[in-house]
Length: 91
Image 1: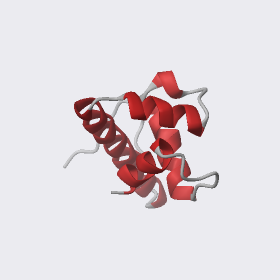
Image 2: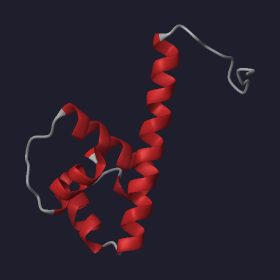
Image 3: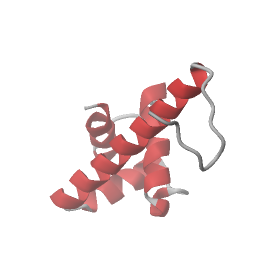
Image 4: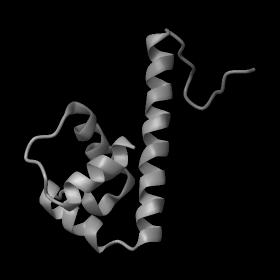
């Protein structure tokens, strides 16, 4: 829900200040959609306003998935588990 709330804040230009969680979501949005890398929050809001419903749903899904992967990697690192690049942990 935080992703949708952050997108809403961007769309309606409701904030000049963003929480650390919102900033992480905005940075993840930039990683998911290369078109947004150099954009300001206001430009990102205009971009999001122009999206269709299906495009918005897909973008939210991509951001949520990316945030989930980053969280999982962070948990592995904090637990001290590291694996060589390209290898996988056996279950």
